[in-house]
Length: 143
View 1: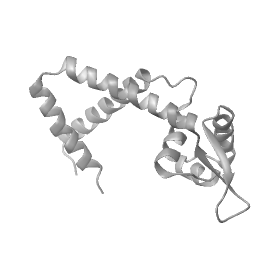
View 2: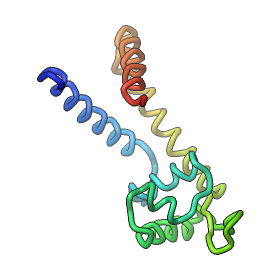
View 3: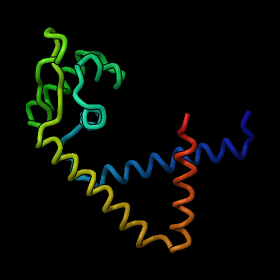
């Protein structure tokens, strides 16, 4: 059972990470993408081509909702559909070159914002402390 100090630290850490994520989202030129669209693009990029059903399960949404999300991404040229390699009844969605380019631009903007913030707002000693804290956060997420 966590003690009061650990509970307070957990609350503070969660709020701080959420605020950092909001700053990163604001720093990137994502256009009109919804959070679900961004998440789907990321999933396809990291996990490879996927079916509507697989993406819906991963995003915890109904397949009908995922079809709408994928339709909007396909219409904007970010994803493309192709036949499923083993099941002719299904299709898989993958990133297009435009989708990869968009991801690269978004990632670079986020990294640039964070690198500049670290360089301008933290002393060298604080930067070392942040590097240590980053490693600790990584350990917290290990299963």
